[in-house]
Image (tube, rainbow, N blue to C red; front, side, top):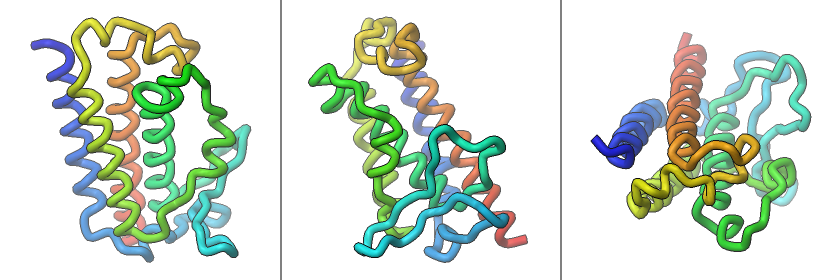
Length: 179
C-alpha cells in the first residue's frame, strides 16, 4: 500500500471517532468545566468567544472543557493547514503560534463548532488527496513543524494522531459530565 491511501485511511478513522464523540453535543456540554480553574471557551463583551490560553502553558496544564478541546482542534488544524498548504506556505511566512491562538475565536455553539471542525477536516482531506508520494518525503511543506527536519508524511501522520487524541479527550469529558 502506498503511504497516501494509508494516511487518508488513518485520517478517516480518526475523523469517524471524532464525529462519534461530537454527535448530539450540546452547548451546555461545551462549556461544562470538569474542575475548578479549567480552561474553557468564554463569551467576550463584543459577542465573540475566546478560549483560555497562556504561553508558556502552566505546569500542570489545567483541565479543559469540550469547547476548549474543540477550539484547540480547530486552531491547530487551521494553523497546520496554513503552514502546509495555505497562505503561510504560499507566502513563505511563519505565523506566530501564540498570536494566532490569541485571535482564533471559538464559533460560539456546539453546532457551529462541529461545522467548523467538519470544514477543517474537509479542507485537509482535499489537500491530502492532492499530494504525490514524492511530496511525503519532502520537507518543503513541513519546515514549520518540529524544527523543520521531519518530512511531510510524518507531519500528516502527526495531524491524524493529534485528532485521535483530541477525540478521546472529548469522549472522556462527555462521559465524566454524564457521571
